[in-house]
Image (cartoon, rainbow, N blue to C red; front, side, top):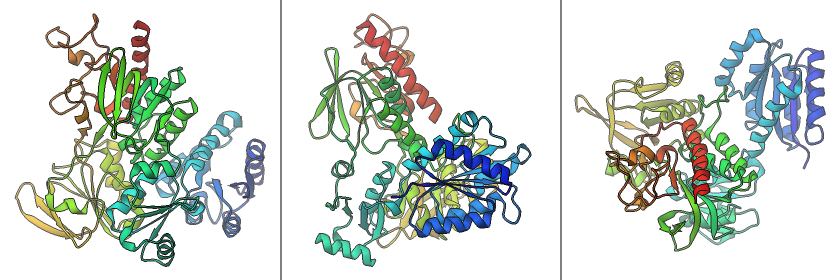
Length: 552
């Protein structure tokens, strides 16, 4: 396959030559560098690249070009290569336009001219964008295929699992010719979906997550029985702990029951994370963290659920569902939280068939032209509303309070208020729903008057509450009344350590009631529930792990 392309377009011949020269000097052995001097010429080059079936990695376009400026070019180019990363070349006076372009063309970066020296101002930007592009699944360049029905909950579960684990796949409906041919070749009927056809030709019919993970290249079995550190949970806190633990020489394994990234990994865009002024999607951020952990030697086990924790002398034993177990000197609990289910029993049959908990960003293009409803008023709901507003006819945000101001960051409030097809409905709750095979109608109630209304929709996304995943710790680790894990000073009552505490010292700051077991991120009582603080917890937990091990 031909090398991927990096395209530059600038109407100033000197600048055009300079940027192409600098990029070719650094990346010419791995990428084909194409230079254009106008938006029209660049679009013609993109059409040729598309016709040849080649790949486009990065586009750099000058803002001030006659006839077609950089933003207009990138907007048209998105239709041809939606996965290519986009950079706007701009002068300092045009940074306002560049910032606006972040929303118009989902800009990845704007680069001020001049960028000398490129080692400081150009190459780090391009390096990061190429890493992101290389890690982004491209359904058109993969042979793994998923066949199913549009409103099949098991089909959605398979697609969601693959997408969240950054496994490329192509989605085919069972009622379309190609999907029907694959079903016939596998000897199954449309009633048996989902069907997953792996790149080697293996056919999996309605596979369990563990079986699917093993076939698509995700690790499900540990390579050892004993580790220095086991991290339970692959969200920002768990990934942070795995990166710092492995990089500091601890034999580390991370165990995740669903997909690395947790709730943060499902976010369509995170705009207030330190070091990403242009924002970053949850999958990009956690995908980088996953690669970083693997680079330092951490193992990552997917689709494995830990069901029990035991203290066995100086070791800590973690048992998986199915009977297997691993042992470690220390454990970091980073299982995060899950969205709370709606208290409307009539909606339960539609989970995965119109009712989704979390953003389910894979469904956004399918919502094109439809009325979409979302429950929740915190940042996760706001980020999803902005993302879905690009596809849906209208996004309705249903909140139980008077407004979003108390629960959402100001930057999100400002952006939501500026988008015409996002409508906020205060004092509104979902009390029921109906449909034939999938959601078709919602029942809404005014929390003040009690008045009930029905609306036609096939899409409901739920972002309410934060329930910790800690039932499996019952009777082993101290938790508060809501199930969050107590750590450090919160374990000390009236100056007294926990009754079963076995050491002569007080628990460390993130240490639980079991010595050598730490909690990080949202699962910890009194945590801040932010991505940055979760990563900080993960890093801090490793420093305390070292302190614990040194004292043994």
